Image 1 (tube, rainbow, N blue to C red):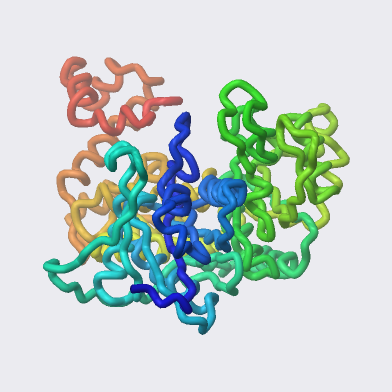
Image 2: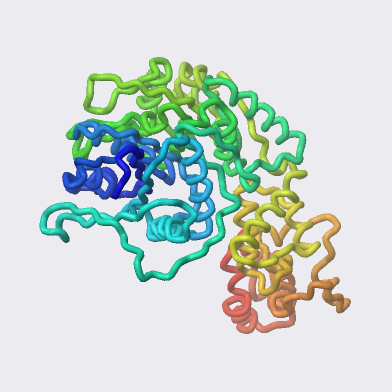
Length: 522
């Protein structure tokens, strides 16, 4: 029996079927639960909704609107649950622990009956909710819905009985990424704190922390991969809006015909395919931060409506004549040359003037090389923690990484290290495991691979002999091809090989080098 004096609180992940599945009139799991007539005498008082990104924060707002239209009076608390991998049990478990701790702190001291709904989200998300309740780490009852098609035409909900199941003892999560909730204060976890060893990036951080104190728009400028999203999250997490959601929109990934609906929402029937009313990302970010990445990719028409939304703090959904309040702190980012776009009539000057109240330019990684080494340590540390390994770089590999120009910036560095960790056959990551474009770097102070090996020197950590021999062979082959203008017959003659033997080596032993573009420009 439930205590009628207690607040009845629901915790659930928001999934792709909430509030309705695409092209389906049957309510999704959470709305079905709230509409369940058998529980009308004892309805939920509040719902804490875990949302893994802007799309699901928007669905949470849609759910709130649908519930209100159905006459359901319940307090909704959307939570930004910024998990990077929605099927990574460890990451979800850590973030869930942080979220539940924040929820209980925010909820206050009023007695509550807590319920976990095991219907929405990925199987890994449902499993972590189950473990949190079953292990005793959170005092929640587990409930599960039965769709009408499996329950005689009527939605039914039942408590998950744990009688007869073995007891679990799980350690409480100790670290997790930042949790951004509609009401509580939160901070960035150490694993997501920006690396700012260089003076240039330290200045970026100083300006970001200054911008966080105000509600004026922020414009982030910088090349792709420099960390604009991280800076935007930093501004959100350290500012007055940290109690609201953080909604990110990649403007370059939105079809031009759908951009207006994506940002401002639409009414049911507004256009072909608009079978449900949609809130839009602006309203999903209500009270929090809206981050528009690659804002330079928006059409001139959408730019005009974005300017009006900023000026009026309201949006007008597609298919509606009525504006709706939408108060969100706007952070925009681009790697484009906006002044040139203005001259070419591809970007509105008035919108640019409105966006550039606070401008932060993020320098590329090649201009802040002091950050490379600590970034390497962080990314390898995250890899080792994720996979329980002890990977590390050899001196030669480290020199190459610190000498490379990094046109893809921090993102390229992280991907290169993950690629090298996958390719390395030992804990020591040597030059032979690095991506080919990095192996080509002529790094000052880096020993000549062929000469060093020719002396019979073996580093303390050992070597991958097969990979090193292949690399040495390729160095000779590539040099011969360059010298002969990519003439394979002439290159084979320089190396004392027949033409067929040379082509066979390229096709078989050295195919991984040649296929990765080493031959281009030779």
